[in-house]
Length: 197
Image (cartoon, rainbow, N blue to C red; front, side, top):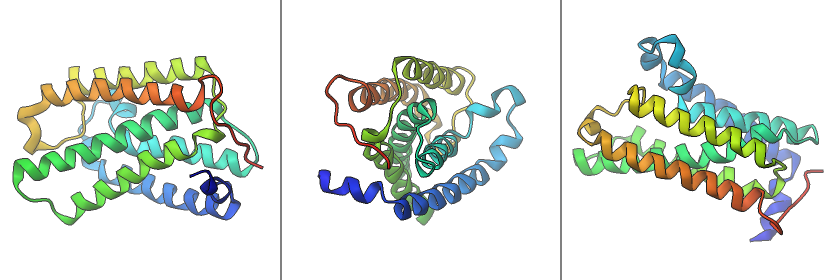
């Protein structure tokens, strides 16, 4: 598995990933456009979950291309990319089971969000965040869950409305898992570490 890391650190690959993530982020904000128009201004930062996660990673990639680390962006990226990547995969699979079908956009969302989750973890050896960065990220992430499931600002999947309490419970534990993975891959003693050169 470790043979892949020189490829991941290659500047051409980083540049290509930057372009892909910028495009995905832009599309994600466009996808949320109608919901953002109906969202009270105070909640706006907490509604477009996936594009904001990929935006964090855009900043991580920019820093890597400059030979630097932006630790808070790294912590936010690994937690939110994994969380919302897996969340969207599960929600679209649920849509399939509830509706009995899934359109091509649903399949595209499954593929692209799974890739989000994977890329966040793959770059973990290059991250340099500390406990306080992860604590800030945990507060952001769990606060986002409150906004989504107490104030009902979650991404709209109307066919899943009957399952919102269960989805909220699942999402909370997915947040905890995501924070735990960030600790395991990026903070724990003797973790696997690499440098972006």
